[in-house]
Length: 221
Image 1 (spheres, rainbow, N blue to C red):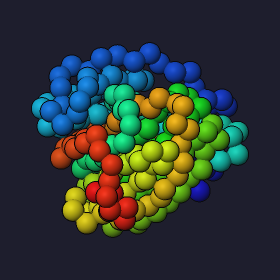
Image 2 (cartoon, helix red, strand yellow):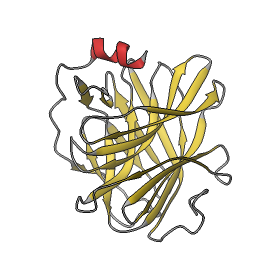
Image 3 (spheres, rainbow, N blue to C red):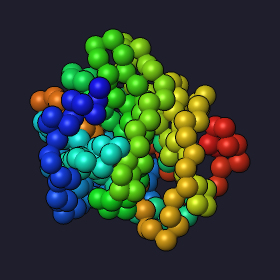
């Protein structure tokens, strides 16, 4: 259903990239300064990021490669080697497919996202996509409609990336494990999207980044 709705609204081809701009401020948990790609508003304090996505913004490519859009605002920084990166994503949903997420980025044709998105007024879901450049679209964990925050985590170990989610930031569930091209430098960070809504503002807190290899595969720790 999502693919059908978005195919009506999306551009015939993937939209052109927008140059990155520095984000004012610094998140204590992160090792480097952040940059903002695509129109959007990023507000940052020492321990949280508020990222507002404008109307019609999305990070999506259809599984058949026929259409897509890369307009969702992204706030990212370079990440080298193994790491554990997680955050609490709070989502005052208004429209279907509104959502906050974490993202891996190596350009328009190579990216992955881990997303907490609204399906309808009664249900939300944690989903993911990996585009190389054609994207898969996976729906993992249904979340009751009255839950407006989840924890998301991206872990890199060598040539592998794992996605995780949690309802409390302690008990993690692995969602997927996929191989990445080790020759591609990656950025990692946050995204916000509102493909059908007027605007969507996500808040990221409890942010954690550690340059280390996990010991527990099932929990990413």
